[in-house]
Amino acid sequence: MNATTDTSWSDLVRQLELELEGLSRLVRLSHRQCHYLMRRDERRIHANVRAIDTTLADLRAANARRTGTLRNLGITERGRKGLKIATERADTPWRERVQALEVALARVMELLGHKNLQNYQLSRFSLDSVGEEMRLLLGASEDPGSTYDAGGAAGDPALRGAVDGRA
Image (cartoon, rainbow, N blue to C red; front, side):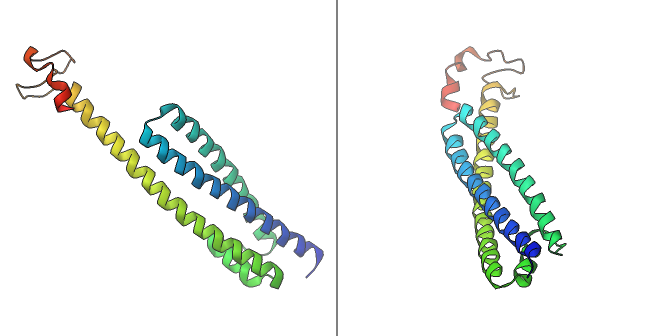
């Protein structure tokens, strides 16, 4: 092992550590997003989305740096496959560190996938709920019992108080 190769392995380990930190931050932000979605805290939802976007931009840059470092080590494969190859090619002290980080990254990615699915389902439910409320409150209907007409004007005066019951 020469000094240049040793430096490349050191760079790779540091980049993987930074990626792990960034992905862990995304998990925390996703957890917060779930909480904010349940509370319907629009201000915090928007602020959290901006933080997620910033973290994603940092992770894209880190991934590009990792790809360059892997290329310096003679590895052209990307993603987990590239890390698996790196683990096989690394000398013993680096192999253990790269392998541990690859396992940790996979675990965090799985957790992030679960949290993203949960947030997607919550967002979808919220949008469906809002859509149903809009349909009930503002939607035009051929039904003579409609609360509102297509223009949003009150329908049958006797039904004006029924909005609360239908929503």
